Image (cartoon, rainbow, N blue to C red; front, side, top):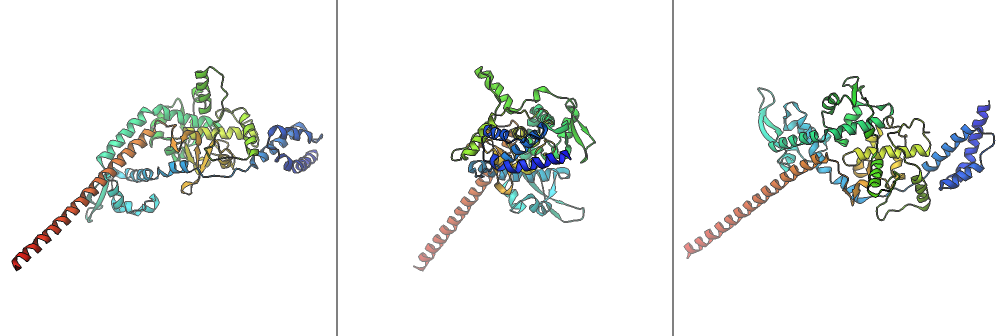
Length: 433
């Protein structure tokens, strides 16, 4: 009966004070206001629960208008062409013998989001594939097949070399992802799904897990119910990017630096005064290391919000392009104790993140990693992407040169025909005379 009365008192208290509290964006003013309204019969543990609920309501009620960042959107759009080529290459490499009939690839155009015929695509990217004729079945007619070109095979060798040189970086990324996770385990299917975002090689489970069994182990085999589990806690991996930057600045200046987020809006962006005050107070809160145990934090507290921002910041920092589609991050909401409405963090903390809507997909971008829309915080594994783009551009230049020569040849033929016609007409005139 007592609990029921307290519950009613809490509800009444929330209803009466919420409207006033949400008007007080400054946390110090809000705390003072809250203390003057505490009903004397509510026990201390209930007061804590009420305050956490009001805190959550306060910052969740804050509205930040989304505004398009043209430069960051352009950085996403610029990757569209080479990503399409990478999808086509992956499709062929996954086939038995890494060869396939061209018409089979044509049937998969819609799934691959290819808006031209496969023949046109291969002509446009001459260094990716070689074509030849063969039979699908012994007595069938010959059809066009495609296979990786020598140039593409050389790129694949380079890719293997880059993966080998950065193997310890990949291992540290996997360890960090496990160390931030609840119970230090992550479903294998989820890790496979995000391998492209973090730069993991296709064979990381079969190659790296057995090799680095002192760091992690596979539990449950290779099926969808298997998990990758952390074996040993590595203190050197338990420092976030924010903490490492603070340590580096302290080493250079000799002055103690408190770990803090880099909060900065691009030119032309602004937020209202109330929100600026809230951001200032939120930034003054102590930084929470995403690798620390968060089981004691209340899910509706400002501390948990601070920790969630830290986790998302660290995940984006570990990714190749410092951006990840929000639906992919959502797959890890339970693993990293993210709230159901975690995506609102990206707009509420618009000085740390940017939420792109390019291509109809919500993508979380880490602002500090870009300057003028150009990625400046480059992952060493991006050398693979650079090599692939070089291969594509070499092929495009080759095609442009072939087209130029064809046009020039056609013009020369036209000139020859015109000149021949003129000479013939002149000869006919002479004969007539």
